[in-house]
Image: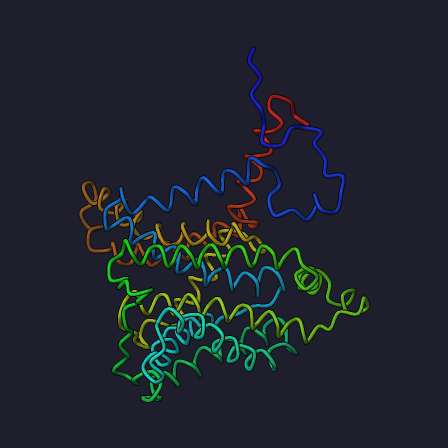
Length: 354
């Protein structure tokens, strides 16, 4: 019988601090990620525009969901206004480009930095709150920024919206999905690598300590207010970065696109993917972005038997997100990443039960 090597054989323990804090658990995991990135690099050469556009949207929203997971999953805070910071990044990048003339490629990270400053301003009072009061405070930030977008003609164009220029990188106009895909992929890799390293750092461990038991963290010398504000800033940066990429991809930014419903979708992404998990942010984003399309196809198939469902497809798509959140909270509260870890563990230990 041929022996099938496992990614991490039974009895392979980490025996040093460097092994315990390594970015990849095993060499197999590292090479798998490198192979996945290589496959994504050549994907635009083989996939059509529809699939590329779907991957673009998944990448953009995954960056923003990753930021929310730093706040909710790492630090144990809550935010119901994430889409407002997402929108602020979109407007900020267009505004910086229009007022300063800086290249859009540079305006995108600058918009993330500007959104960080705004997020930390809202984080100062929110850092001293928790539970329901924190949720209400972040909900207030959603409506405050939405009202700001609608009234600040100099910044967002008001109710008319704002045009976002096409990205130009070293003289190359990224005016097609295939070209823009590489810019989004670059920022996805940078963002996920940065958060993965943040979690292994001293500050990352402090954020998790604040989440797990804030009283014990304070006794150990961790400044709770400082790290809560820091988590708001980090979360806002990735929201702004994703929003800037989103705005320049669409070419036009309007206040109607950043409502409370989008904030709920961001929460659904990290809940379904797995709170506190970097990989879970990506899995949850993929699930939520593809769910409405799957439900539409399912409703169309069922309409053959029940013709009345054809008229209710739009409602089914909207209801599916809420239903899935409830089902995951009941049956899989730790998200898709937990299920994947269990599958991986069973594969590693098969055929033994231990």
